[in-house]
Amino acid sequence: MIDNPVKFAGDIVNGVMAFGAMFTLNEWAAILSICWWVYRFGDEFYQKRKRSKAAE
Image 1 (cartoon, rainbow, N blue to C red):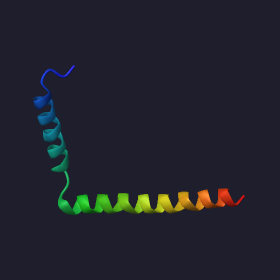
Image 2: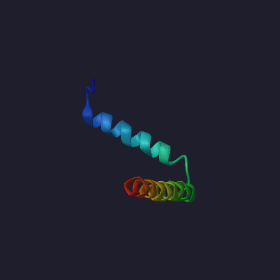
Image 3: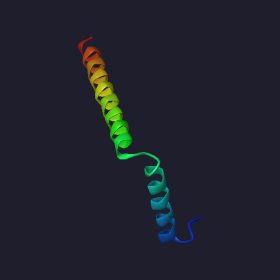
Image 4: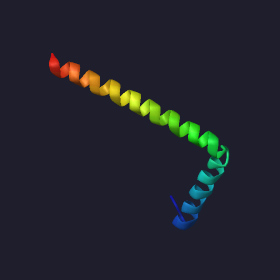
């Protein structure tokens, strides 16, 4: 298992930092906006389906 939780947490932070450094801020902004649009569209679609099922 995890011998040293503090070192483990540090390794996770370093991994996230290294992953984050793969993209520039503009790329991160683009990725986040795409995720947001997918979420919005998916949520709207889901609400419409739920309403049409309730109407039946």
